[in-house]
Image (cartoon, rainbow, N blue to C red; front, side, top):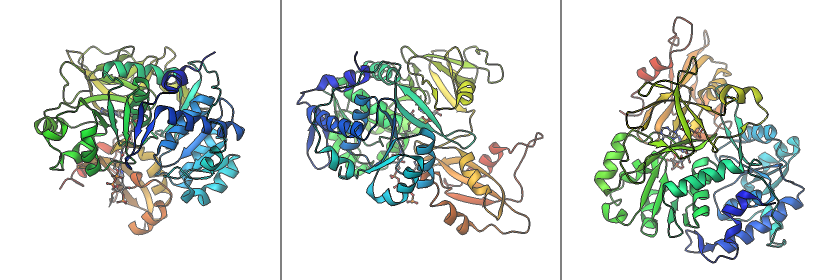
Length: 504
Ligand code: MLC
Ligand code: AMP
């Protein structure tokens, strides 16, 4: 029996001397060298006692070795669980415990804080640092670089990606081999990837965009990546002459446009610029075309579904839209109250069905039932409309979610932490326009009776507890929160009141 994902993405490159990763130190890792590294890692994982279906959590910096752990997980059938490097130990603890991870690999800088967490959860702990060193690699060098790939079917799980929920607790989206492979196949075709492509890769590799969209497409097409540790406009500009394709969140594009060195000449040879994970402002789309002559291709996806829609490769890439449903993906707009499909042109909730849609939330059957219908349609929580030419437009969110620089922040998680504060009676966390991140987090606080809000004390408490990108960038105090007749906080009123927080 084969291992469908491993065979398609990795196995068929065995022995290939073609470049896979171009690194910032000027070196290149071939496909063959990468697979040998992954083979050693696969032995290390299984020698640690992990078997197919076990979870391996990683909170490590972006590196070729980090990517090789993903490959090794696919090869061994172990479920890969990557975590945002910005998460604090308290956040990591939840993921390790909830997933029942058998092994946690972290940067040595975080090992002291995470050792008791792993121990309490019954997980092993090994280290891997940004330069690829650490206890995991030290063991791996002693292993053979050939590993007998473990059989897996398309329905077997390949990865858990956690996505926050409206209640403040994260849910582990279970992604199968078929979810990942089918979407990569569709995108290679739709975006015309070939082995001649070189992708400029500056996204983190713990989310769908950088890990599955960018990396799986590259692997499937046999392309190469310029693999950058993080987004830095100057480095992007320096590396762009060697690339053919770039993928990014809207912040990448606005930051590049802010740099006068980002010119038409610099991008003349580029084949494709893709944007997603957050709305691209029409003005960014227009400015980009004015500056470079390229029209950014905007697509729409999410953790649970991989990619759902894309503007066309040929044909009009329409600003303010996310294009058409991808081949194999059914998309409908429904009435949020009844679930009935709405006529074209009406705004409702976007629902999608296809081989890309995940299997459910790990050990959360109720949450799964709420969002994944029995007939296979997933209720995205995004509000959209389909225009008379079939383009899908996202007009808002039915879910209370902030997207800042492409990272999702669920207000409830932050509100729970703020409400715990002695001086706070209640709080409302909102997202308002931010020139760099698209949306910026504002916390509106109502003081407990007779108390004064002490912003410094509040920030001192939450800073070590939640990732920096979730923390409020502005805190305001009000006597009471605006409520509707049902008593529900009117976040739209607050968003209007504080709309200028970051823009003036
Ligand atoms: C960093 N900070 C952020 C932030 N990123 N705050 C809010 N939102 C963010 N996204 C904090 C930093 O900690 C810092 O705090 C301050 O803001 C300024 O940091 P910076 O140096 O400007 O940030 P930088 O490291 O350059 O990161 C910005 C970024 C990064 C845009 C490059 O956030 C990024 O790579 N985003 C991509 C996210 C992504 O891959 N999303 C895909 C999800 S998948 P301080 O206190 O130190 O000043 C998905 C599905 C799909 O959504 O459809 O693709
Ligand atoms: P995540 O849970 O991190 O995968 O984020 C998925 C969410 O990002 C979607 O539900 C959308 O709200 C948003 N998103 C992704 N791509 C786009 C896009 N092109 N335009 C607007 N929103 C987007």
